Image (tube, rainbow, N blue to C red):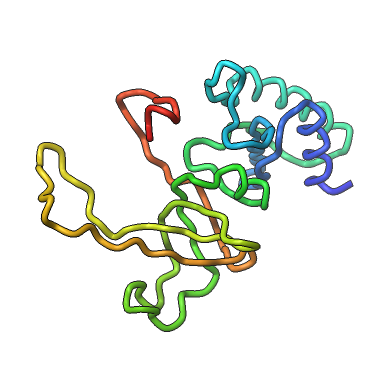
Length: 194
């Protein structure tokens, strides 16, 4: 049985979602897990708070994987099980559906062709914006408006920078991740953050 299949069966059997498997030099086997997405606009419990993978979850999966990998005869020196973190990779259609409306970073396999309406530079492969569904495909929407510096006032006369959109299909993506934005003032509920 292939390593991917063995790990995925074990992780899903324990009630988690396998995000990615990575083998590194020195025999490190890194497994990233997440709580499964239940569908709907947010992955929240009945109290409305977000749920995250914790240390006990990683420990539970680690113990089970150690047994399974030994039985299957998988060669590794060290096993590391972790949560996906704040810059979670988006790999599947389900990931894109789950994080629609969130700020994401994408890297295309090929640069954008000729510059469109003069907005997006040709040769550009990396983009950051809000992920949205666009029919069968996806789009990223962003504004090149610079961030307002704390303590500065924004002129009401100044016109905001126009929104830009880039449509893409999942097979055009080299890498996609949630944008790692850290709020040192603490987590806010989605209702407060908007």
